[in-house]
Length: 375
Image (cartoon, rainbow, N blue to C red):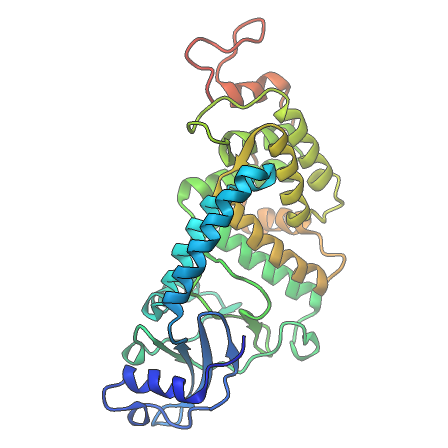
């Protein structure tokens, strides 16, 4: 984004520090080192000489976001009336959630709390580095953190790791966030993370964060574990049971007939038969098409997560075109016991088991038992 004028930045900084910015920060760079929609970042030094990154909120950004989202909400409602894909995506739900997330970014004390949460979560991990936050210098409009001299994510020659190892390290980080901690960077593109020369991943711009509940993590882990073990039918049934809803209906409405076979085909083609290179982006689009045909939609929290994972996978494959996501997960299951096999046993579950998952106990003749026809 184009940078704010230096005078506007100086005004925000002087307002943030009652004694004036010069009393607490020295050598504030006039040109930002990064400029985004909500804020921009400048180099500076503390009185003791330590280099810091100073994030400064853009003037009037809260009012601009509120106006933009009023328009976006109206467009999303119109799109859902006209487009099956927009309904499947639960576009209005996504816009509403994104509005809350972006407005939370206009209070930089919220981002400071996220830095501290990530520091607690990854404090013992020598593959990840979270810059220190100077809480005493952070206000709603200004965030001051440690300045880490980075290596650009695509400048792999400057990192003391093989690119294939870098891809594994990124994949391990994403799995830890999604399956274990539930604390996920929601905007994990190359630009919001970088590397140290020795190969640690540095996470920055932590204003947008997913917080997955234990139940959501369990659902994702069950799906992923089923894929790892080749249980396509179980994985497809699990998607329908826990990750989707009937568009416009009360939560828990029956899944339409035929959806199971179509979702199974997506899982089989995009995951089991993908040669170790499943594509979240392709799966996301394929699922939208299938769900749209059956009047279903992804729960919006999972839509957000799919979009995050699709961003990361492109970077992993750019590092190592032969990177095998599924084999990396199987390796971790053996070495770190990170995944569990679902369902147990060495035999692929048959259709009655899948129907039980979708509709509850099944009577003879294939009809659901009375009162148990809802998933």
